[in-house]
Amino acid sequence: MAKVTVAEQMDKMVAVLREWQGIERKSVEQTSEIMESTSNSYVRLIMELIRHDSLMHHRVQQFLIDTLTRDAISLTPEELAVVWDKIEAHDQAEKRVIELAQELKQGTWSVLQKQLVDYLATDEAKHDELMEQLGKVKRGMYPYGA
Image 1: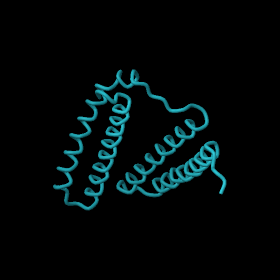
Image 2 (image 1 turned 90 degrees about the vertical axis):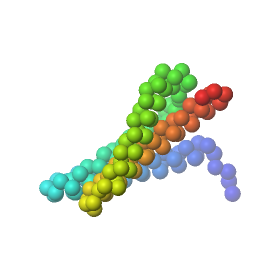
Image 3 (image 1 turned 45 degrees about the vertical axis):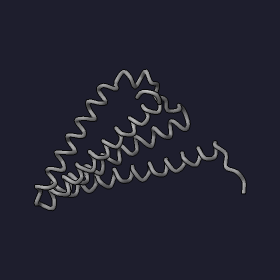
């Protein structure tokens, strides 16, 4: 079996990301069509949430494509140091919001409200995980004191 080169791996990643972007664009179209087809505020909100996520997925995919085809990702310790205090403050706010979401989940009785509170809690947990990953990046930059 022939060994796959880095260039071939990168080409494959770009191809997969572009296909995925096509699916996300279709999702944006579909959710927009559904929103236009109903006046139900609950269905419209769910479609709007999915549409927004699809737009953000497309943006992240394009960023990844750009890092494979144009500019590598970079982050210096100096760049991170400039904003780290603000990042830590934001992380504390995220943790408080997660506590609030858990409190709401316990007191929510409507199935529809519960779904939305669960959505918010899951999204906030995702934000917390992104912040944790950023912290790991920082610790990797400063292995002796971060």
